[in-house]
Figure 1 (cartoon, rainbow, N blue to C red):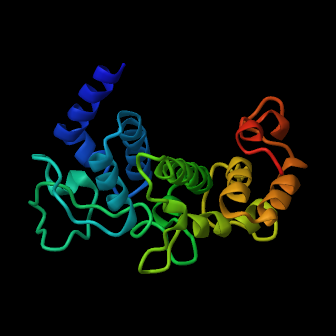
Figure 2 (tube, helix red, strand yellow; figure 1 turned 180 degrees about the vertical axis):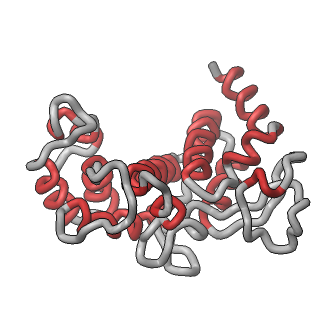
Length: 227
């Protein structure tokens, strides 16, 4: 298993696919970093973990592989210094580049299924945050606030009033349920704020579509039990 993970990690470092996925300007970036960070933590590869964490914080314009993919395919239309023929990776960090100060995720909010993608990306960010607390990583992204004031916590707080029915989502969307119950339970433990527990309870009263047993059957009940 360990040998296979080492081989997979080496492949991710060398393939143009990871250059695209881990540096794309929407949910692919956080999802790629989270899955790769899990491998780095398992292997105890602190150097790789540090690289992945650093790239998740501030807006980055780096070339981490010898990718031959053209600039347009990397999904970074505002890459400075590029005239449309750049190679390498040009992207926006999941926290510093893809979360606004008020917590909105503009690249997800602009999609056809804006609620579905926004909630999915919040899940990616919370997975990334949890992995960042692993002893072999040790750089807590939940505590991180970027230079422009964005953070994982802000991304969650932005969605709470919509999930509670206090605000109406005005963007086009195919899904109207804000399935943030797991992140609220996790946030209560991570940030030590019982408001998240109370909000999770209010959402539980309307049910969790992600679990056949309702919110009580959601795995987060086991992972993040109430005090």
